[in-house]
Image 1: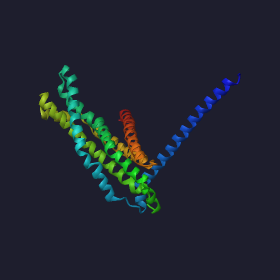
Image 2: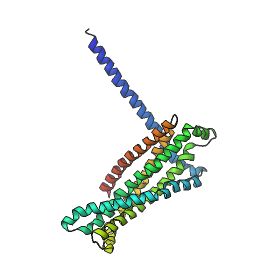
Image 3: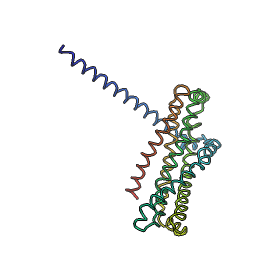
Length: 276
């Protein structure tokens, strides 16, 4: 009887440390796979073109159309309504102190520095990030990725690089577009409901925005584009199975993309806050 308790504790400890060890090994494997994908992606994007391996220009333009041009309607609608909401919320507080004209400052700076990049990134991660994971995952499930490798074609260069370049270009462009549309939404609300002169609103917006505000938004958008592409490709290449696994990895890519977008947004916000 005196050995019963020590044996139970030993079994519990063995189970606990076994679980921790398995999870640690799994995480380390995932980190190794992700770091290898990141290394390969940037090699085929930045180094290989100077060594005779040209970027697939037509595929890149096609991805730009799908990720950028086709996202314009949804980005425009959401940004317009967000601009109106921001103006309403700002007016609710500013009218108490008779400073309604500063609605323009709040809407302009908030959309340019913060809401424009992050809203656009979330929209694109839902539209394009999931599409990246689904496309690569379907090819992986159908063994098309293995077929590319057997033909001597690197799947990262063939599949990931055009998507990465497309998002690095189009996400900042969509962010600028989102900011302009959001400011227009705030302008329309302010002139229609708050009796603010349109010219004064425009001047107040221009005076409140600095070059660093625009640069901050563009740098964030560029980083978000990289994150969304890498996460979508990573989840796609991790597919091992049929349609169910593709759906699960597609969902995981959206969740992970949005989480990492928030994390990188916090990082860049703190960075620009302390060093600009």
